[in-house]
Length: 256
Image (tube, rainbow, N blue to C red):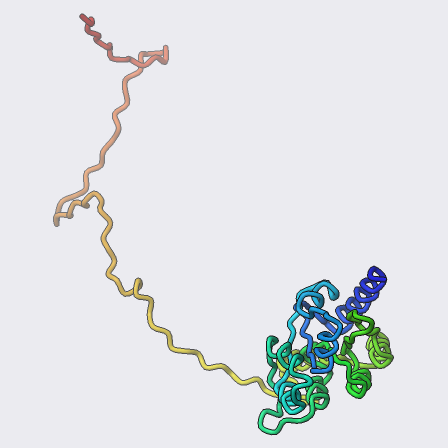
């Protein structure tokens, strides 16, 4: 059963990696119901989650989830202690807290741009998550963590993208960047690109140095009225007819 469960998880993770650009470390948003179930079933979330997902993970929650656990009292005190050990992600309800399910659902707006996993035992939250394409869902069954298979909404979304009927948010960002580079407005009208002002640069300090004179042979100064003498190379006389050149005899001294 464990091998089948890991094969199923590997297949589901590869689906989200190739179609929704999920990358490690996987960011997992947990609520109090998931931590309470893990506490009852003696599941070490921090140890078992990376093994099950076969990669690095970042366990996180929100302030709304923690405040909801505080309001519920001592029954969920253990789940609160577990959640306090994880990272806290900023939500838009800092001043006015909302229920945990509503807060986690709001973190997935605009097509789950931060690539969150949702770990929850809440039935209402899980049904709402399945309506959003590209959101993996984790829950606990029979003392084990289970990654739910891709929702029908995610599958239809991928099929629409592959057939060219739909453009993903990542593709939309690339298109908008290309339009800005080409000077095209979102309406289709061309926009004159702004000319960049050139910054006034200081001169190179090396170019301001005085040129050093190279050491060389001093050139003789010309004197007025004096003509330049031409030098000719004297050739040695050649014996008549034989074409031999007289060589001066070399005197050698005996070495003592």
